[in-house]
Every structure is written in C-alpha cells, then in structure tokens.
Image (cartoon, rainbow, N blue to C red; front, side):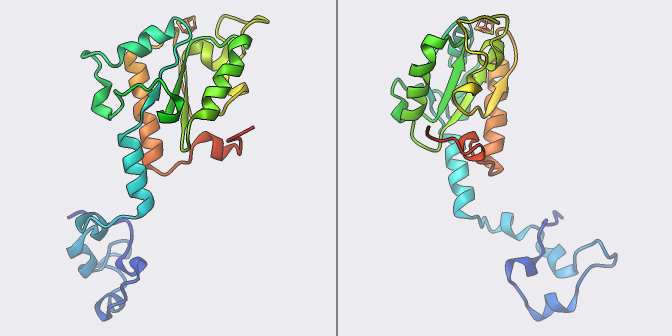
Length: 199
Ligand code: SF4
C-alpha cells in the first residue's frame, strides 16, 4: 500500500487513534491507521489552489510565434504530426504576445532585434516563460561578434536552455517537458526568481 509523505496529523487530523500510535512496528514506519489509508491527499483528490493553477498552466501553455534564424525551422516542426506538441497542450502558437505564455527564442538575436524581442516579452502577460533554443540564443554560439547579442538572458530572464545547433525537435520537446515539470513542482518563472519582470 502506498504510504503518504505526510502524516495525517500534519493535515490537522488529531483523532485519538492517531495520537495513540506515533509510528508502526518500526520507528520509520507509519502507524497502522495511516498505513491503512495510504496517501490520503491523492486518494481523496484533495489539492490546493496553487497546485490546480500549476496543473492548468502546465497543460495549456501557448507559445509565441517568434522565429529568428535556422533554429526556427526545428521549432516549427514540433507542431507536425511526427512530433505532435499538441500532446502537451501546446499546439496553439499565438501571433499576439498578449495571448502567449512561452517565448521560444529560436536563433541568434542581433542587437537590432534585441529591442523588439524585449518589447514582445514585456507585452506577454504574467505568468510567462522563456526558452533559449539553441547555442545562438543561449550564448551566441559561433557568432562571437559585435552584431549578435551574446545570449538572450542579457535582455530577458530565461527559464530553460535547450542546447544544440540546431537542437532537434525532440530536444525542444524535452525542454518543454522539463519546463512543465518545473511548473508542476511550483518553481516560479525566471522573472520572479531574478526579480526582473519589467524593466
Ligand atoms: S544555434 Fe545553429 S541552427 Fe540555431 S540559429 Fe544558431 S547557427 Fe542556426
């Protein structure tokens, strides 16, 4: 029987029976009553508002349409039937940043493009996330020169980096899944962690 991580007493249930037994036959085992019930939270489908919100955000994350260079071709292919990003509730690429949750920066960012990119990021409503897709978006890759921004995290907070030149669609999907895991675990977006939402 699955045993919950929290004791029933941690949920505020102080029945006489729970108070009677502090632990099972061994000190690290739960009392018999708790062992019978197992994970009460999962069995009764109890949850918190934060968990429900995180679940909804994770399952309906819409990416912004923002292709910059060769990486964008790989990004576009994630909506194809072969990779089918709709399995993760993400097939609806939005052309308006106001309707998008995830900015996938796919390709090198020239200095000339930095201001529009930041503007699009600012126009996205919170909560919002940013993926730096590929070597160029993450660190400028091979373009160590005056024309290219040396990493998109210089102008907006990045939640997840996907390596590669270009990353294959499978790598983008893995980045998306890992981002979903972070959201499900309650990790706040990068702008909250870095206190850099607007600026
Ligand atoms: S990482 Fe490679 S594929 Fe992607 S934009 Fe840069 S050069 Fe092109």
